[in-house]
Image 1 (cartoon, rainbow, N blue to C red):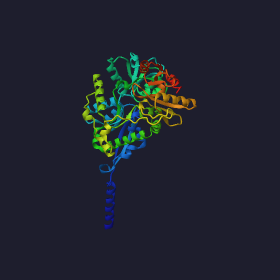
Image 2 (image 1 turned 120 degrees about the horizontal axis):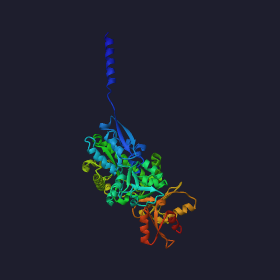
Image 3 (image 1 turned 180 degrees about the horizontal axis):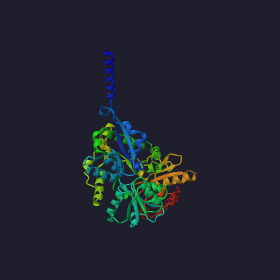
Image 4 (image 1 turned 90 degrees about the vertical axis):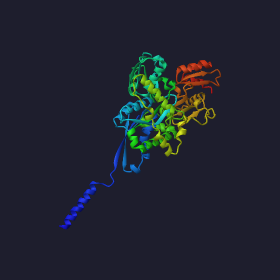
Length: 473
């Protein structure tokens, strides 16, 4: 009898041990809202996902030793749905453009307990490029003023929408200057292709993607506003407070993704195309050397000035709630990421330097000392080659084509706006008074090319005409 009692007690003890494990682990799900097809957010989203970079930096010691983090990646086509997900506590980290960012911050502050923090930047254009307005390639419209009374679509609440509103206010145009309707990038693209609308305004990369695909022409670029544009990272404040090391880990992963792109931008563009279906030639336009956007996580003072300007634009239209920028912006996490990586945050914060085109021109045999004058030619089956000037770049295209080689794409820099553009989509000012030393300058906008041609005694030229002018080199 005694032995039976002992065996029962032992069984009960074992049962209790099984019911109360000594080392219980906790699953923590992190909802991350991305915009995979928005090219200048890729190093904050799809690159991290596909390369599993966040997992590399997640904390595993101290209070985190018994936590298993599960990453819940959710992809969206614009910023507002990400804000909705954050307010619903389904997303903890999100990325979006400047206007959606400020709405995100204001919305969170209007709902105590749902506050968000701006913790890092993904990519920026110091002069506003990335957002733009396109028309059908056969359209008679060449500048923004031509669209008076016309049907123009834009994703409402997006950075491109903010660009349009700012452009209207700066020109003194009333809200009914054009017939403005809300359409997503996908719907706007289809309607423009089918000529159901007169113009479509959109954010990166669509204002360049649609012309690249052959049926659209850009007539306005955000660089004309001279107001910076950028995409940043917002985090729910309660999540950042509870798991600050996770936010730092995310930013360190973002910084590694930035370095990965810069180390081999051609290969990175190919992977980005694989993951997002946005053509690599377009991804390279934005993220390659001298590209439209600069990868830099630091929160610079002028970006906060941009937020203030955007908030004023929306306030005048009664489209946004108040925003306490000082309470919303928090550099603590990105500073800590720089510190742990032994990098100088303040030095990076105060520079706008991008990585530039460099090397020696293989055709004209001169060093590339002025990156803004340089061009690049991407031949099918060959690495991208850099050239010292527009003339040398166009001459290299002529040479390649005469040898039966296929030119995938060529890039030049707009002389007025200072932005990288597709050579075959540009307008040119050409002076061929000396055929052996032609003067050729590329421009996104016809009016800028015409002004340069008039000022230099040259002529307005198309891409084929510019190629012909460079034939004597």
